[in-house]
Image (cartoon, rainbow, N blue to C red; front, side):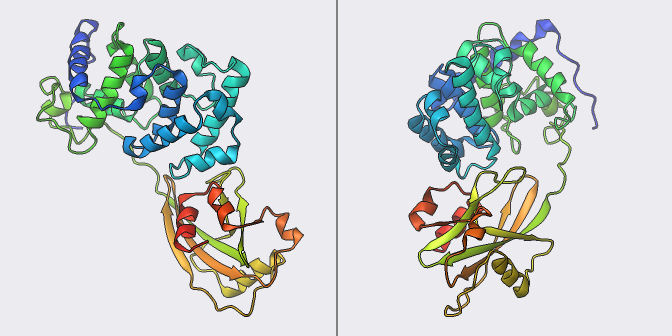
Length: 366
């Protein structure tokens, strides 16, 4: 860094930030459905869905969940596969599993009512500091500041904070400042405003500094450090995994299985899988994989072309190849014991699947 960070503001200097921000917000805020409710359940749904998701992408999912599960009791009572199916396409499926569990926890332990304070909300599974602060302030007007990526960026630039936002220890610095800036009388409005300001005005790339109401006070703008703040260390390089899917088919059925725990796409459905260290799967190994399931390849069908696809996750890259295998007869019971089960096309549609599997099925008429 070429400049020292700005000094921490004194208590007497906090009011300018809140007043400027709250004057900007009514003129620029987007009209979003979760901003028209004090229902903690609806607010919680929106926050879970919007974590690591753009508003444009998350909005239809929010509307679908509210329509399908209008109360926390409805969500708690829904089958897990059904919830995952509605979540399909959003990624980070642990959010959906935690969301379902939390709904059941609220019903079982809190009589279907969300806890009424930040401290109590933190006791819910999957509800961290950010989500608890959002619900507490938006639903209950509790004076506790939210801290998400947008807020980190706004505070770092305006106040010249150079701590690495990827470092857990930095959270205390940013949280302390945010908690000092939030006004006593408008905590919900302030939290909505600062997140919206980061999303619309103080954006990661090409922020609108020319028309920024904080231009005169912004440390980053005044010191030519807008592109340098916030400081964030680079994530580790994503590792590459090679998936060879055996799309086992017989007549009008296709075999899928439910993925187990402690790996990506837990609880979602895909095909029989052979993971290798390289992108190539020899024909002998493919035959061995089918025979290990008790399957026998049909000899009266032409070999179908290999389908390749790539799927990029936050910390992994999946290089997938789909090998269509037509079977001479249905798989034996021993294969079904491994988790594989036969499904008709209409049934496959209803199963929760990753985007990788969904796209393959859509493009190959399964």
